[in-house]
Length: 279
Image (cartoon, rainbow, N blue to C red; front, top):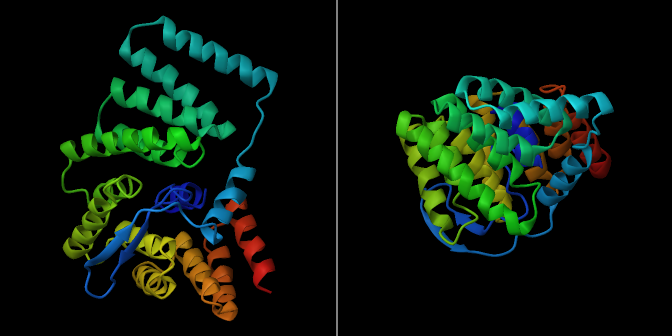
């Protein structure tokens, strides 16, 4: 979930895409027990600033010819009934919306494909797409997108209940609801079953950041990159956690390391903005 998590969570991610509406949760890293939870509006900090930077970069205006092709694909999609042909057209439409960074439409047509061909791969793609899009829609729409994401993750788990990464992603759809502790408990269950599960560890680290428990976030992200030294988004967030703690030297160290792990231009631009800030 490396590249997608960077995009989805930084809008995100892995973790995933809920920067502006996460509840404030308290997670005890050592005891793996929930100390308490307070549902609040997310604070305006480095996490939301990263989201704004990513949103600004996710713009691409289609050319006239691209618009015409998209219109033709869409017309064909809605004019036929054959499921396989509809799936092919939906896949072509999806490709264009991905290119244009229209993530609400990516989610819609990923869901269409999942309904036409409900295998685990397509269900997970739809779930990930709705999670990603939830960060770029209006506040009023966010809950509906997370509900859709949860639905597709649950359907994927019906097919493969042993997929711990899917469970970890499912957990993040709960943390913006009135029952956020359900998500925390799912993540803790995953880590208990697989202490090396990267998705769960990343998400717990991210939630620690959201609740301003930066020392705990550092512990999580350090554990993550010990498991996977090439985890670019985890390395970046480790740097960001150190920055929040006022340790600019450590922050820059991990920002530079993250730059060498992922050449994606958007990711590079985000890191450069923080390097500039911390120098």
